[in-house]
Image (cartoon, rainbow, N blue to C red):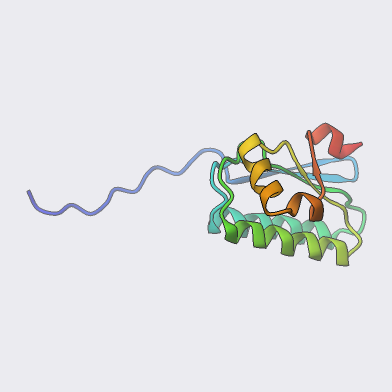
Length: 124
């Protein structure tokens, strides 16, 4: 049997990052299990757009569907947080799964980043 080229999977109906404006806040929901390069690129674009609007704050990242956060993603989240802080915007990470919360705790990023229990609490 000849080698067949790998089949491409059909595009997902749900984008990796969806954005919803709620009052003055922006909620970016990550619809992926793994924070990979593509989803991080989309996330940076969303945050850049939110920062460009001076009326937006807070910026909430809903991580409820995320199961794996590689070290590269942790570094990018720290950079995004720093960029938000330099522009006087609040960045809140919401709804972390227990295994993701554990990664933030082990790396002590839970003390550096604003981690909240739910999207609702992030909006209060």
